[in-house]
Amino acid sequence: MPSKSVGAVIFHSPATGSEAVRWVDAARMASARDLIVGLRPHVGLTLVVGQRPGIDPLAEAADVLVETDSGQPFHFGQALQQLIQEHQLSGLIYFGSGSGGLLTSDQLRTFAQFAERTTPSALFNNFYSCDFGAFAKTHSLLGLDLPAVDNGLGFCLSDAGIDCYQLPRTLATQFDIDTPTDLLLAKRAKRGGENLRRALEQVAFDHPALDTILSLLTDRTSMLYLIGRVNPATWRFFEQEVACRTSGMIEGRGMKATASTRARFLATTLREHGADQLFSILESCADGALIDTRPLLADADGTLPSQDVRYNSDMFRLDEVHDPRWHELTARAKASPIPIILGGHSLVSGGLYLLADACWKGRDLPRRLHPEPFEREELPYESD
Image (cartoon, rainbow, N blue to C red; front, side, top):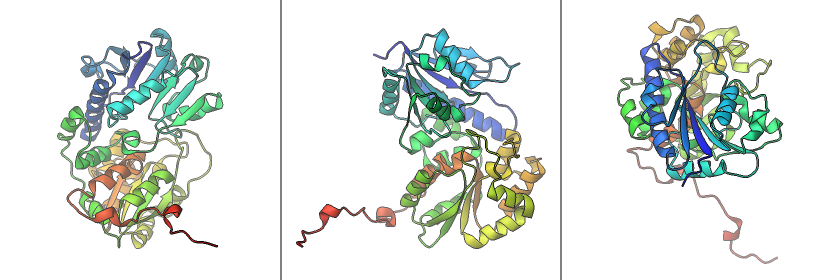
């Protein structure tokens, strides 16, 4: 039986706007439904937090709907502390509505069991930029100055002396629905629960470069360039799972979790020399590219334009990209002679796992061209 003092909280920020924004919102809602069903055997209480009426479709699945104040900026840390106090939770699991949807029942059980630990502890899917986490002995959180957004939560708790842990990097722990590109990749890889798959079928959007990128990944003579907030461990996994060679540049890691005054190399290059020169160099180095555009185009203080601008840029819908800098980069990427996919952080995190999975569907290449690791004890005995 699940502990009544361990609860799960799903935060959903309903969004309206262009078709692309509505697709992402519907997919997050569908993923949240699947997650609630998966959590039910493992927690005593499930809460959904967000604006009403946007979160009302989850009413049948959740135990409690909590409406946030539309007149005040949402503060993640304060909301978390309030929920702990109001529902007397000694252990807590939280998710953003686009995350956690691919976790298995066993993984969710393990997550809930972590929240029952007897010492103050935290477990994250990504310590450096959190999407979901579990907390044991939550009273230890009540006196802290928690951040307004969850990205920097790991640093905050670690600095406060709370033992922090990170889950292994896998598709299930890193996948997060954040952009239309994520929907397209999940649909192609045939991933997600019943509700999410049904929502993905409504996404009537085909990326002009996706098929070419997938073919490139199984071609050992090709070079794929990765740009953006790529975690080195994720890059290593990706390189072991695909046949092509990879190169690229890590840019902007931690831009949401920890502010930095240092300039970003590619962002500065783009600003000073323009998209045409940047892409001309890229095209001479690679056969295709995956680009996390947010570190390249964010303002100096990290500010980004509306979801409408970002999402329609990802989809190459130039008529709906009304920001001049984003329009210039999007137009040049769309016109590139090499296949390019644009997206956010999730493209170069969970998206790499999805691409590595999807590229082999319908193709048979034994062992994906990578040898078994060598173990020293397998050598025949040698005497001095």
